[in-house]
Amino acid sequence: MGGVGRPGRASRNVNARAFRRPMRPGVFRRRRTVDTFTRVHPIQAVRWAPDRNAVRIIDQTALPERFIERDLRSLDDVCAAISSLAVRGAPAIGIAGAMGLVVSLDAFDDGSLDELRARIAEHVQRIVGTRPTAANLAWAVSAVAAEATRPLGSAAAALRAMRDKADALLADDAAMCRRIGELGESLLADGARVLTHCNAGALATTGIGTALAPVYVAAERGRRVSVLACETRPLLQGARLTAWELSRAGVPVRVITDGAAAAAMRDGRVDLVIVGADRIAANGDVANKIGTYALALAARHHGIPFYVAAPTSTFDAATASGSQIPIEQRGRGEVACIAGRAVVPNEVPVENPAFDVTPAELVSAIVSDRGVHRPPFRFDR
Image (cartoon, rainbow, N blue to C red; front, side):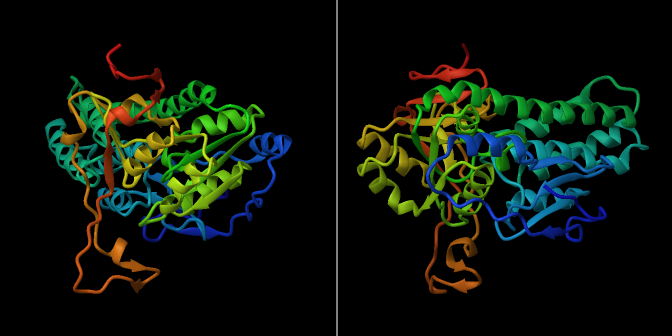
């Protein structure tokens, strides 16, 4: 989706260009969607820069007004991009963190192996601490860091092994997304009307997404599918990101306010709900973007299937239930200000949890790259 200017630090490496205005949603045309899939270049939310000395991301804080790619070349760049949600989505931040760990250590390849290992521990702690709820971040960063614990002859050899592991995780994530799409598309009948929350599409992964992967595969195969995207307050990832990527791909999408979702279900305009996940506990409890729990309750009341789609890297066997999942608390400004204008009186406090936990008993099935898991959930088989 366009080139990027001269690499530099993340704050300077900004190349914006207007993206093509997406097709207006209207009557579904089967041929139009299939044709669009064949000619629209896939989104690459996270990848190596051409010199492989930086992590290139799509700056998602700029969408949909501008398409900007940034190169992350230091530990500060990586941590700032993840914490600011310039790169977001559990799989995407996992891969960005893993690749970012490698580039943050490139300057230490001529030191001793012990010195490098000490640096790795420091960098891992900082990167993982940026988003504590997402299981993928700690999993991917730790997997790359573990390569340096093997018996290797030098710091340079350890860094090569870490880079190879990051490459493997990058490829594996894209493949896992495709498998989720292949396994989950059978849940979508022809003419299915899907409600989703936040963004769990290509922008949230290095492939075709998690919750949106079944939608993309079904549409790719000519099935009529449309999406209702909850706006997802306070940062509007549904309105800004899900609507952008679906309209770009030619999939009919309509944005609704978060508060309108239950009414849409009552009015018979939703056939199923599919959401992503940031962490799935051993018992099947699901942590996802704040507001997911309310959707699950509404879906249960109206007899609508509620599905979760996530790669196995999101499963956390060490966490017994959702009550043990740490919930990230974000800043006041995300709630109290809109477009630079205060919408909450200064003397009034706000609460801004990034996630909530949906109990396993409200989940109809979890679609992973290993299969479609149904309750009672057991992920060890």
